[in-house]
Image 1 (cartoon, rainbow, N blue to C red):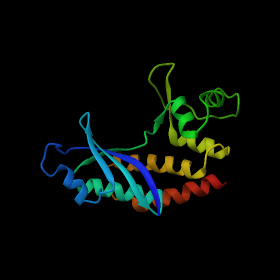
Image 2: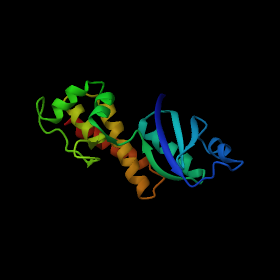
Image 3: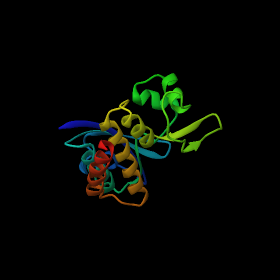
Length: 178
């Protein structure tokens, strides 16, 4: 089994309740650190699983079993050029050159802008682009896409996402291979 690190952000539970920590431990989150920040419960997992999709799916179900409402799964899907450089283990200058089209074509377009000087990209889109050019591992790109798919499912209110994530993982692997 491999160890996977990620966080589930949730809400809806009172951190002052006597059983707050026990709820997580008793419902399968015994491999996580639970904290409360800015009105959200943050559950930082280091989960052993055969696959990343299995780790995410089991964690989402475990957190949902506590009665918490899942807000999102992280690492954060929106990234700056500096975030991209850090996640891809590249320099900020190299990523800027890719973005400007000086070292490759068709870099993904920004998904959002904080200011006109601070665009943000979907990590899954950038990871796929980097992996297709051999600049990032396929496994990292698949994990980024699975976090995106898990977040979309959570937004729809789904918590039993294992089969969907497994199918998406297999499809994404096939897509990257072509």
